[in-house]
Length: 543
Image 1 (cartoon, rainbow, N blue to C red):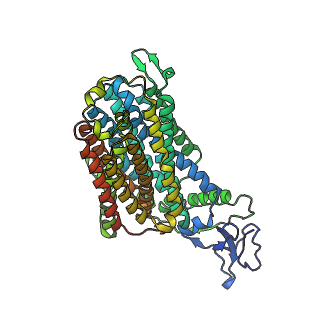
Image 2 (cartoon, helix red, strand yellow):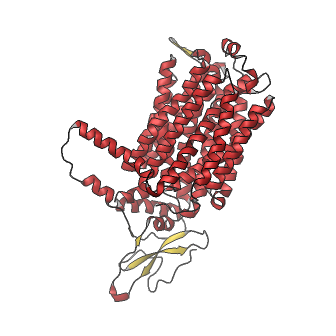
Image 3 (spheres, rainbow, N blue to C red):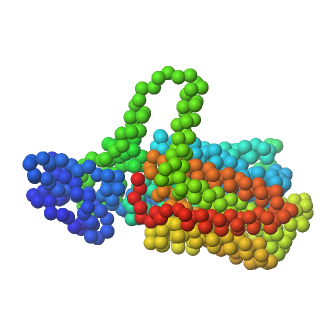
């Protein structure tokens, strides 16, 4: 039962009558939630409903079933992106024979999806700030799934490379937008923990990809002939990896509402209130609380921009105008009070993306190289023999080890959820990057397969803390009208780093393995130190 403020002669359980006023500061004593209430204003006979800010409306809608369902929907989208990105690394040990890949070719293949993500990240982020989060998520997830599936039927390396690039364009849109979308439904005091919970679904996607690879790729029954195309088991694995993205797109298309924060920013007050009503109804189901009508403080700027009279212009002038408008968010995030944090965040994104993706995408291949014992860099004299041997029968141990490393994300994710709101993202980001740097350095030093696997698990468990903290910090550093654009830009920078990391690994893993591994260690350390320059965002309000 909720505790109510004194509302005079107004029954707190009856429907709203003219003259009732909202009071959003009532605390539910059972659940610790804030719910919409009513009070009457009798002074001078003037009775008007109070205008609520965005944060007040979110708090008033409470916390409960809606947010857990939202977590599942957004988490599945996040997991689908992880599956699509990481599936390439698991197919390398077998696909390299069918597609006749050298180590350099494998570097290009793992880099191709990041090139697509770099292109898609900013474009989709900008569109999400202009057209809405939900619409962009539907399209980007569909692009991801469709082209990912088509890649499985490619008989040639260049076509497979192109389709993986196009799949990456879709992934580049959903990753930054999903966190902006999710955070804009969250009450301030729960935002850090819930974003951390959302980030854990990346681990779920990682485990799903590793598990599918372990179950499907070594199986001979998955081999069929489709005319000139020899459809090996790794191609079936690619098809299965596209299903999460397509199913997630369908969920957002049919079930999910637009972000109320975005609706307020574009002046769609009635639509925003309907979303808050949906949140309230689901969160207060069975509690007997009644939703009260209210109004919102909304921004009319963007609405006015959309309604302005446009004078005819030439195609060239329209293109220039469109480019200037598209690049204006970048100018804004690197000017004024945002300049310092944006510069630091750019360096952090570059360092963690180069380090994590540069090493993580090569784990299955490195495990293949240490299957007979030793360390990854101890077998650099064997590349010729490695690539001349048959990829079949598939070594199941490689995928089992990949599954173990993926599952080692779990402790880091649990730790992040438990301490994020109390510690803050900045401290977790810096500390985890430094520990990750040390673990990578030790991977180079150790001399046995067991030690390499153990340190890879440490790197996996600690680096995921850094990613979770970065998701929280990046979301809270920018205002609504720049949030998706900023995250899209920085994830684009991260993709450049991931591309460079994978190409460098591909070029040097056969000749000088120490260089890429020690470079990863140095960059992770740099990112950890630079992250100390970021402002503290613990439990801050979204602007």
